[in-house]
View 1 (cartoon, rainbow, N blue to C red):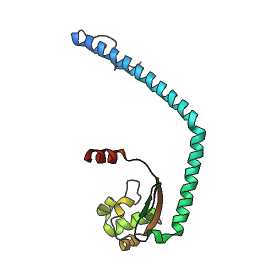
View 2 (view 1 turned 135 degrees about the horizontal axis):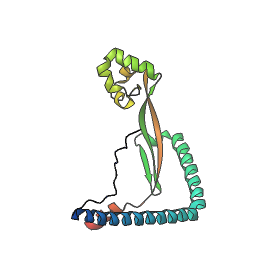
View 3 (view 1 turned 90 degrees about the vertical axis):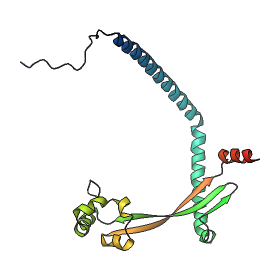
View 4 (view 1 turned 60 degrees about the vertical axis):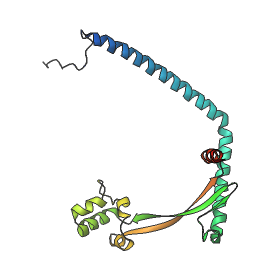
Length: 180
C-alpha cells in the first residue's frame, strides 16, 4: 500500500488575524480579475464588430496599397539616376526610398561550423556558433568578406525598396507651435 501523498494545498484556515486580511484581499483580487475578464471580452467583441464593419473597405484599400507600391518600385527601379546622389525622394504624398542592406548566405551550415572550429579552434569558434550548431550570422557579420569566404560564406547585398505615405507629425507641429 502506498503512503498518503503530502498535500501541497490545504483548506484549513490559519488562526491569525492577518489571514482574515488575506481572505479579504483574495476576494478583491478575484472580483477585479473577473471584471477585467468581462471588460476584455466585451472589448474583443466590440473590436470584432468594428473590424466586420470595415473589412471590405480594408481589403480593397490593402490591395490598392500593394498594387501602387509594386508600381512605385517598378518606376523607381527603372530610374536609378533619381537615386544616384540621394537614397530617398520626398513628395507631398509621401516618400520613396532605396536602402542597401547586406546578409550572409551560408552554403553548408555543417561544413561552415567544422571550418570555424578547425581554423579558430573550438573555444574561439563558440562565439560564432549557435547552440544548434549553426553559424551565428549576426556574429559573423563582423568578419571581413575575404574571411567569410574562407568559411564558405558569401556576403550578399540587396536594395530594399520602401514607400511611406504622408502623415502629419504632431510632435513636430507641437514643437513648431511652441516656438512661435
